[in-house]
Every structure is written in C-alpha cells, then in structure tokens.
Image (tube, rainbow, N blue to C red):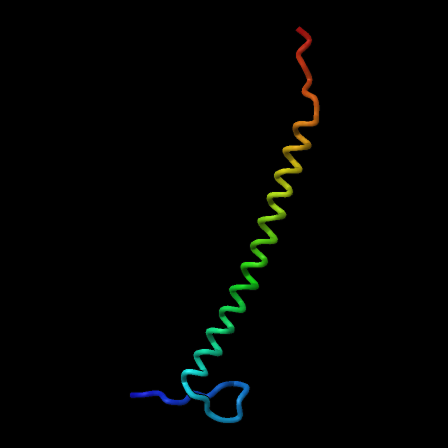
Length: 67
C-alpha cells in the first residue's frame, strides 16, 4: 500500500505525505527547542543557587571549641 496524501487537521482537504510529515517534524523541533530552553533556565538557576549557598556557607564563621 502506498500513501500519497494524508488528511491534515487544519486543512480542508488532503495534503501530500511529505508536507504532512514535515509539519510534524517542525512541530517536534519547536517543542524540543522550548524544552531545551526550559532546561537551560533550570540548570542556570541551579548553578546560581549552588554558588549562593557556597558563598553563604563560606562567609559564616565557624564556632571554635573552648579547649
């Protein structure tokens, strides 16, 4: 069986199979870019939080024993 045309949700008719799959691929690429941007933001926040906690921890004096 050979598929030449597929129905696309927003089109009124049939679309060539290549265009149909190209739309799907473009949607996946865009979703991956958005997900990667969210991960990048999260990782940057994690790095900033770790740097902040290291800075805070090192600036607090330790209590010395009274010996």
